[in-house]
View (cartoon, rainbow, N blue to C red):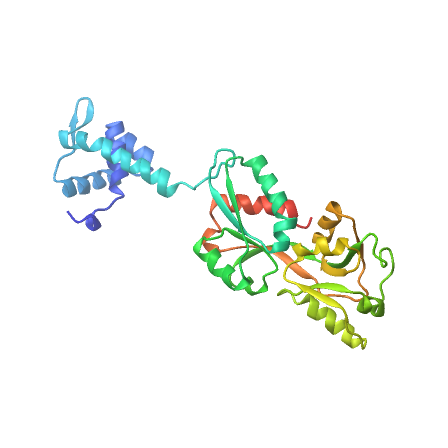
Length: 301
């Protein structure tokens, strides 16, 4: 028999008749008229080539064929209800799911520890992984599920992914507390003359600084370039260099070391840190739970 020719709506009719052994009660459960249910039973008899139910003084009794089919049909319907029709749920305390989050190196230092602690409190058996990917690889990683979420300033993802704004990233100067500029007001000439550690990344902030200085007829004359902000603290501790870096990272460095922040003598463009995810996983309960947790930690209130 070709299953494509079988009306699967007949299975609930069969199941209700097996349980109630009454057209009236079965029709009431299924919210059908008795005539519609009788018509469905007639069609079912034609499909299976068996009377299925025989009217007796004790109601409709199943034939041996119907009795043999009762449990398989009930099992099929239950699986459909639980596996296909019911909405998935996510129980944080019981889940052993593995989530992977993509951060920048700044995010890995500033945000990641807070995420780990919050997940441990709510979902102690959930596994977490951190990935740092080039921006060009993030969209595909989200689409394929290689990563579940990405946190950062990724403007190229705006048209491809769902996103939720977390906060605006500001920039500040940072020096050691024993630096000659600590506690001083920076002016463009003073800033330009200060030896600096420069981290050039895709944000374009260092280029924006160079442009602001050029408009004032200035340029930095003593710079040391590094590939990552996380390499700054050992150099800054020596008390010779100034660095421009995201304010949230400067806050974290100042908590762990002898550093002080300086207000920059020009305005720099802010960038927005957002949470990104692919539409494939928008309705996934686990992904939604983790998104909600992260927004509760870092989202602007």
